[in-house]
Image 1: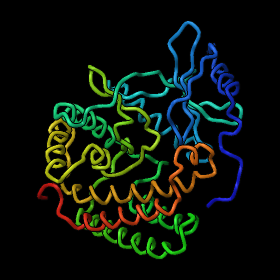
Image 2: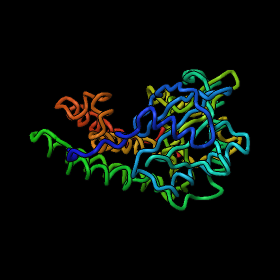
Image 3: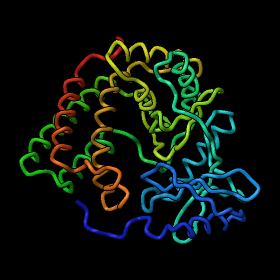
Image 4: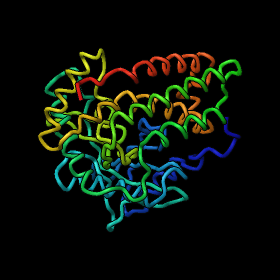
Length: 329
């Protein structure tokens, strides 16, 4: 694992958080509530005589200022077109702020519940808004943010795990072998899909990043936004058997294609992207293990059982990678 180092948010004390917010000319009430976030640190901040705000403090050395601002600009473009996202607030025209050695942004607080993905109407509704997000995402490309592809989400994380993770010695070569097989299957899936286009994505479009109200969904946390295939923002909405996933996909695309055409060749990538996420997720945990929040939140990581389960899961994915897509392409 990584050598010991200073935890990335060691100096982010309650006083530092409140002073950062006050530095923008606001008057915090002293109320501070930590929200569920591991990559960054996110807090609900009470504001005197106003609604609470949400402050996101960015993990040092993950994104450059320019990369963060690209994501902010995309969120603001979406909001300007009345697409239900939660963009950062601007103070004197600036959305990314620096204080006490940390970078942070403020967001309006939005409530909501987890969407019910078992409901066909909900899936179609989500699909409509994803279609609108992608229609704008196609207009321009990110210049500084990396792409989501087999190298960035597969080969590089796999190499990191083999070099740095504390794999049990008796499992290391087995794990290396299943990684190689999985990445070869991913390559075959990309070859079958052909030259699909990339666009600006949400990038991490799971139910935890969608808040549902009676007025429908709104999308939060574009922190993982990258260039990639449209299906990346769709596949996490699907679960269950092939038949169930096929029916769910039909509902999502019924709404999506009201606003944005979907290239059916991308269905070849569905299991490939699922496989890449599994590899990337393990590497993410390994990279962050020096952050005290991670051993506390993920105590099962890096155990013998964890790596055995990962080997089993990847073997299951290897079989799925060569199955035909959900629909005929």
